[in-house]
Image (cartoon, rainbow, N blue to C red; front, side):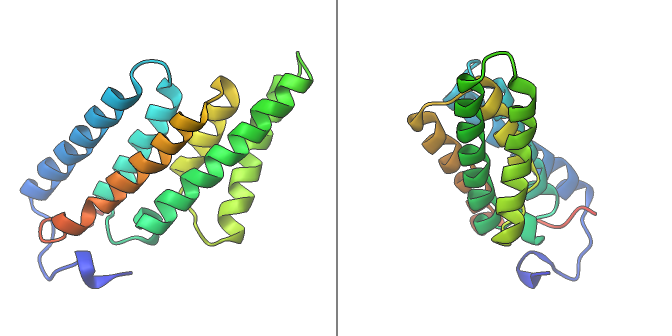
Length: 158
C-alpha cells in the first residue's frame, strides 16, 4: 500500500462527501464524452471512478492498473464481439469469454482492475470502434491520473 495517499488523519465527512462528488464529476465528463450510445462502457468507467476515489492508495486504483486493465477489457471485448459475429446466434459463450480473457490478461500482467471486466463485457455485447476504444483508455487514464493533483485531499475511505 502506498503512503502517498495516506496520512495520519482518518477520513472525515469532507473526504466522504468530496470524494463521492469527485467520482460524480468524473462520470459526468465520461458520460458527456460517450453519450448514451455506450452506456455499458460508461458503467464500467463508473466502477473505475468508485475504485479510484474510494481507495486511492490501492494498487487496483493505480494509473497502470486502470489503463492496462481497460486495455485488456477493450481487446478481449473486441475479439469476443468479432468471434460472436462469425457464429450468429451463439453470442452468450463469447460474451462470457470476453470476461475470461480480460481476467486472464490482467492477472498474468499484474494489472488487475476489476471494473475492466465490465468493459470487456460491454464491448463484447455492443461492439466498439477504435476511436471509442481510445476514449475508454483515455477516460480511465484521466480518472486514475486525477489522483495525483488531489493527493493532498484523497484518503482511503475504508
